[in-house]
Structure formats: C-alpha cells, structure tokens
Amino acid sequence: MIDLLRRLLAPEPTRLPEPDAQLALATLLVRIARTDGLYAVEEVERIDRVLSHRYGLDPFATAKLRAEAEDVEQEAPDTVRFTRALKEAVPLEDRAELMTALWSVALADGLREAHEDRLMRLVANLLGLTDVESALARQKAEQE
Image (cartoon, rainbow, N blue to C red; front, side):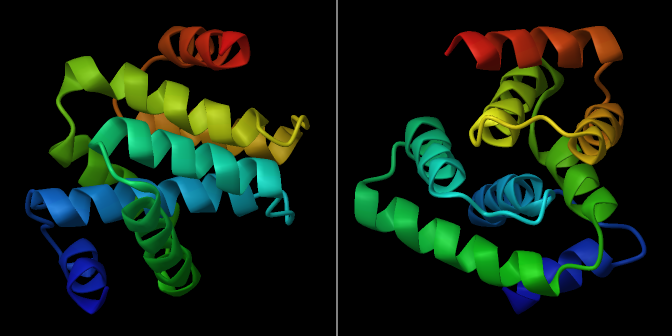
C-alpha cells in the first residue's frame, strides 16, 4: 500500500506494475462507491464482481484486494493521481470498459446524484475519454 501511494505521489509517476494497477482500479472503485457518503452492500458486491471478472480472482482474493483498496482509499490524497495512474496502466481501447465498471459501481445503490456525476465526468476526462464515451459506458452499465 505504501509503495503504491509513494509511486502515485511522485512528481512524475511511472507506469504501474500489474498488482499496483489492480489495486489502483480497486481503490478508484471504492472511491466512486463512497462518493455519496454511503458505502452500500450493493456497491461492495458490484466492486467484487468487477474485480473478479476483470482479473479472474477467486472470492477470497477479490475480498482481499477490495479490503486493501478500502484502506488505500482512506489514505489516498486525491482521485486525480489514481486516475492518471490507471490511464498509464490501461490501454486506450480498454478504458471504455473500465468506465463501464466505474459506472456500474456508481449506479449499484440505485441512486444517481449530482456530485457522483461530477466525479464520473472528471474521471472520464482524466482517463482520456469523451463525455459521449462516458455516456455510452453509463448506458452499458445500466443495461447490465
């Protein structure tokens, strides 16, 4: 956890190795889920599904990664650095899928609030995605 934060806080962050990229994504998912001040069971379950599906993790490894991400999220200084790190770690063609995963967590509790929308717009922009690409990702997440 400390290594990940140190790398993200570096003046010129380098490309994250895979375990750190997984942790950064998990941390961003947790941050999105906690944005509205409520960390609902539905959001936790959705995070676990995203991580399990994306990385082929068993339930124990998934829960361990999410728990570590919850700790990192509390210590993390800002969303921008995590998002930049993910942008470096995830190829452009996979970022729309990543955005769909983020939207699925944001929508998991059945609520859509203005501050969540603002954060999702910022994250999409930082990932190098357009508003249209984010909207398509949201629509896909709503259909899942």
